[in-house]
Each structure stands twice: as structure tokens, then as C-alpha cells.
Image 1 (spheres, rainbow, N blue to C red):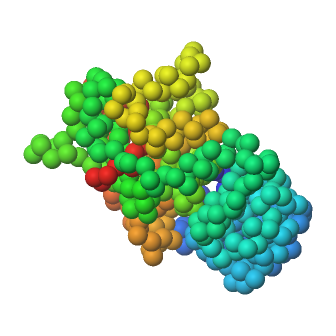
Image 2: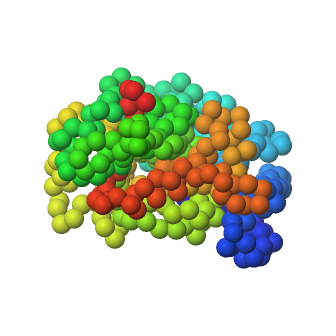
Image 3: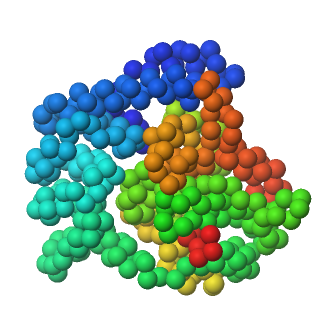
Length: 386
């Protein structure tokens, strides 16, 4: 999850958390959640009274992040958006990306005409792709001409792939038991819907080629959401979790309050630099990835999304818990799950005192730690029999 740009005074929360470290996580308590939410809203409301210029650049980026996190639309901001869009080409690609994340999240389809006028003037191919995805989500498909520089970018094939994705066939869960797929290995399988508003679940394929089951023989499923709060496509930074393979790098505990103290699973994408990189001393990356997927699963283009996303520079996708207040998303179909910034997020519930009362994350992490043969890979897949 990206660092918080918006400056929020959490001194009182941090002080009390020090008193409660042994019994709970104060950041997840009602007192701290209410305080943080109020401060974020107040700072957003103050920011939208400011002009957009080089002096207020950081204020606005922080406001966009807070608005996205809380799905919060500040009073009077809608009337300002057209002017900000017209001024957007004057700012750097980092600012433009932050703006389009917010716009895609909160104002889908409302400013297509304004975006059409400026998308070619944006500062990077990634941001141009975000603008085109915003338009496409509004059923506005721009005819990118052959002489347009964007058509030669590394993002254009991924943008085209998303346009044709709905016509692709989906695998069934049983295919992930196929012996050509990581034979003899324990594998984590995160099965998802094509509609990322619907939570999926994690299953564990044991080394002997079966699904991990309980004492009654029932397959065990651990709830898991693979949706980014912005719902952007997989190939864009902070977008939905890409389908495909991830290399597992072990366990860790995050220092990010929004992720919380529950043990997380560290992973890396193809091409991502890590302590245990996906590809080791081998430049035939495509051949290696094909062998890992195996004959049966290779026919599904969707399972190459992590390969594409890694090649385009996505990083830091892990599987973690959450302390984000689910009440931000109470009107959404994925509630009480909380979306992330592209990670796999397992639901956790905390009581008013900040004590964890339920954790899908802790449950499956505990199971992993007891396995005689730990997994080296996790795969994310949209399936036809979720």
C-alpha cells in the first residue's frame, strides 16, 4: 500500500497504542478510526478551498488519496473538476496519476468530454492509459490513430487486451489440480470473479495434488478480496490484483497502520526486484513462465497478467489483512471487506477497543506455517465456477 501523502495528526492514537500494544491495535479502535476519519475529511474540505498550483501541489495529492480511501466527495468539489482537468497537462505525471486514480474511483463517466480534450497532452504513457481507461469505463472508446505516439508505447497492448478480455474463456478450479501445473508442490490459489466487487477466496492445493480440506472432507476456503479501491485494470499501478503467478518470499509484519499487525505474505511479480526474485539467472523469462503454468493452464491468456504487470513495473503486491474501517464501504457489495491498492486483502474485524475479533488472514497464515511443504508460488485466477 502506498505511503500516506496527506499529513494527519495521529499523536493521540499513537500514544494510546503504545499503552495497548500487548492487547490490541489502537489504530483499529473506534476512537482512533473516528478521529482519523474526521481529520481526513476536514483537511480535504480545507484543500478544496485552495487554488491548484505548485505551492498547493502536495495538499491536493493528499486530498485525492484521502478521498479515494474513504470514497469521500467533498462539498463543492464537483464544480472545480473541469478546471483542474484543463490545467492537468501543466503538472507532472505523478500528480496526474494521483488525480486520475481519484477521478476513476469517485466520478466515473462524469467528465468524459473534458478528459477527451486533454488526454494526448498528458505527461506519460501510463497516465494516458489511465485517461483512456477512464473514458472506456464511460463507454467512450477513443480511436487511437496509427501516428499517435501512445500506440507505440508498452501500455497500448495492455490497454487493447482489457478491451477484448470479456471474450476470453475462463478456467475451472479443477484445472489447478492438473499435474502439469507445479507438480509435487504446495500452491496457494486465489480464485476470483471477473467482477472484482464480488469477494473471492483462497484455497490451498497440497503437494499431493488435492485441495486442503477439514476433518469432514470439506474443502477449506478463506475469504479474500482482489479489488483495488479504484477498480483500475490490473496493468496500472494501484489497480486490481493481476491474475497469474507470484513468487512467495516469506512472511512479514507491516509497519503500515492501514494494513495492521497481522502477519502478511510477501510476494513478488515477474521482473520485480526482490530478495528472492521470480526469475533467477535466466533470461528466457517467457519460457520459464510457460513451464511453471504447465500445458493445461497456458491456454488462458488471463494467467499472464502478472507477467505483463511486472514487465510494466508493478511492484509490492502482497497478501495482507486490514485495519481500514469497513464503514467507508458500507454501500458496496464487497462490504465488510475493504479494498486495497492492488494487494490481496483478507477481511479482518476489530471491536471498538481495537481488539481483533475475526481474521481470515490469520487463519490461513496459521495453516501455512504448519505445512510440512511450504508453497513457493501463489496464483490468482478468475474462474468460471467461483
